[in-house]
Image 1: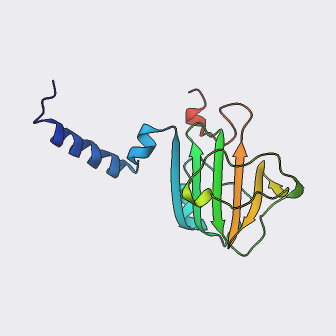
Image 2: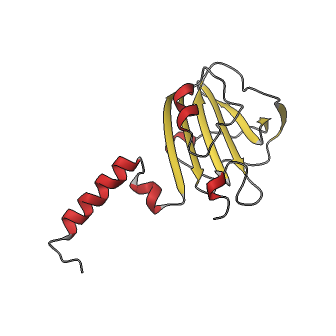
Length: 149
C-alpha cells in the first residue's frame, strides 16, 4: 500500500524509468506519440512505427512526427527545399490533419494538395506538412508487433 511518504519516491522512480525508456509522460497517458529529429538519417534510424514514409526527401531536417500508437493517424512536418519523393499526384484536398500540435498549425488549408504514399501533403513555410488517416486500424503504419492489439 502506498502511503503519502512513499508517493514522492515512487513518482520519481516512475519518471526516471520513463526517461530511460525514451517514453514521455504524454506518450504513456495518451494514444499518441510525438517525435522530432534533426536529420533524415536520425529519423530513419529511430522512426517509431517502422519505415519512414517514402515521400520525405533525404535532405529533410527538423522532422516532426505525431501519430497514434495504432498507426491509424499521422501528421508530419519537415523542413526542406526539395519536393516530396516518389510517385506523387496533385488532387483536391479531401481532409486535414486530425492530430494537432503547435507545429501542425496552418493559416489556410489549400484546395489542392500533393498526394504521396497515401499522405496528403501541403507546402508550409520552409517545407511540407503531410497527414495520413488510415481506413481501419491497424493501418500500414502500425508496427507488426502491434498488429494484434
